[in-house]
Length: 224
Image (cartoon, rainbow, N blue to C red):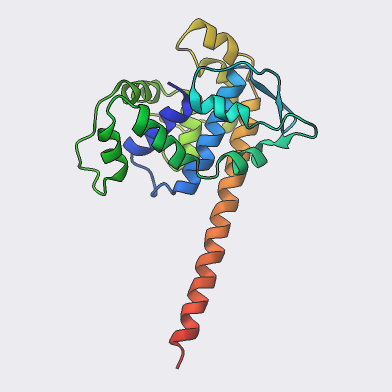
């Protein structure tokens, strides 16, 4: 399982302070991909620029697609530019991927389309993996979820971005090999989370401008 897949299940299963917009989720999934690519040493960050360093495959179709879409010529692109480009429609892409490859097939399709959260939730290895990471308060997953307004109720305090970066070497500790790779991610996690925060803020500003414009348009037609 990958961080984007786990984040998707957390977004579905854990109550948020506000409804998670698909655009916000897409940006967060792109950030999760970038963090996994950093852990896998497929990319590195030079200041805020995403620099490919390896062409090896991760073994996950979506992460490999992400790696294949990297800009491999200078001046490369910033982490935030990556989020906007890669994040376009990404939540729908992950939904489709899980619908077709997930162990529960049609059950996943029903889950994504349900209007009522009381609908019985399917059980799957993917969901259990995400729930386990969430229960262990893994910093990468907690940091990404927090950006979407999904807080960990079991934590007495919400970790800061700096704390997520400080403890990033423990975020992928499913195996010793992953832990060794995560040790190289360090403060670059903070760069990705900061870029995600900026992108989400910008997206919300765009929504607010649209709402104001739509309200103004409606008022024109309502005026006597």
